[in-house]
Length: 241
Image: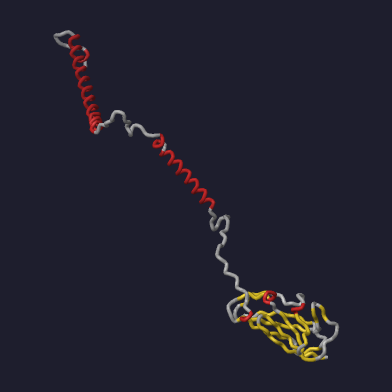
């Protein structure tokens, strides 16, 4: 170390210091050259690749890759905006749809109701009438009328079909529900084949016409009640004192 700091030899110290400076400078120059060679080698490959496909621009034209129309450059943003909007719309629809366990609107059953049955045809009806066979001339009578169909289901409306009950004695018309709407039977049903329906009609055992009853008492004898509901049924009774 002492020889390096204090040069020894026949020449003066200044000569030795100059030599040392030259050696150090040469070393630094070699290091710099090596560094430049290394760096220039890497950049040279890059430059070679880029220059292997030079772009040719025809005078008067514009490089399409360098210049884009505003619509092309804004396309990604527009698509992003549309995706966001559609996403929000989908979320709104999903949140609006009711769930089975939620409090949403209960779906309404839109199944088509079966058609109403057609009106009954008189020819397809069978009518029977019953009551008290023997009763005093002062006792009221209640007739029970039964109607049944042997065809397909139909709708029976007594007012529409003109149901009525007549009481006669021989050729003498005693009483009829057809002469007074207040006496006429009322009601309507859907008749199923083989399933009868019944209704009652009250007769005060008096002669009557146009909603008025005769004050006189009927004579003892045989009387016939006829119920007409499409078909006709008869019932024979006997009045006594």
